[in-house]
Length: 90
Image 1 (tube, helix red, strand yellow):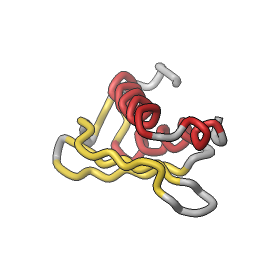
Image 2 (cartoon, one colour):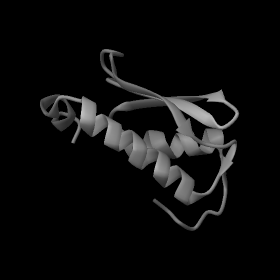
Image 3 (cartoon, one colour):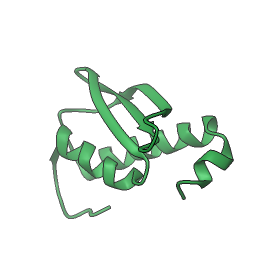
Image 4 (tube, one colour):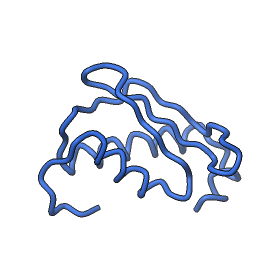
């Protein structure tokens, strides 16, 4: 991820995460002032692969914050997704 930017808004952070997780679908919404719900899904079927609530975030974040969110989502994905399904996106 480009470390050159200093701050990104929540919508822009979501776009960075969409690019990171492509070809899987990604969407996130703030569920509280300081946390988000993230969902990774199969673009073809729309089936949710994993949804994670309560991930710390802010309306404006720096690159390190976005990296931490991505790492948290990846850790959950690895823990709960059958390896053969995850490999189809690698």
